[in-house]
Length: 205
Image (spheres, one colour):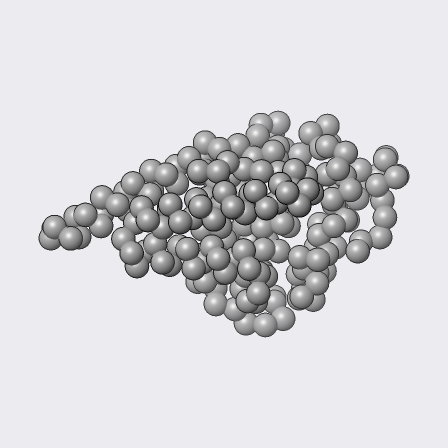
């Protein structure tokens, strides 16, 4: 192997080791079998959802870019950790998370060869901006997968704010008719799960 390629391989191996942290990093979400969910598990099912949902969207999308964004967007959590959505209701906390994650993606991009680093950073930036159609789909899938997981977990693992957040997903899906209808199906599951607590049942925004 040429010296330059060997150096690239060593850099890639280092970032793949960093990726292993996502297998170990636990999210707030719980599994149906009573254990915590890892970030890697969340990313895997989000990717699986993207692979199948792409056939039903209102507009054609670049499936390669969509899958790449879904895979890459949580990589910063290997450095920053996972922050539950209900901890981001404060503007200050959201701003802090953005600064930390932006610094993390810059660090990750610097760990790999320049071309790979530029690709990773561009995908992360596109996801975060949620302007392109692919980014909107990726963002919606990220949010919907999390709610599906909540619906599968025992209700005792839910916080009170999570019972309200079931009905706050519409702003992530209203750009696409299928995604919005799919969101309503997931929302219906969540509503049925918390049905004994009628105070949380309301119309979606």
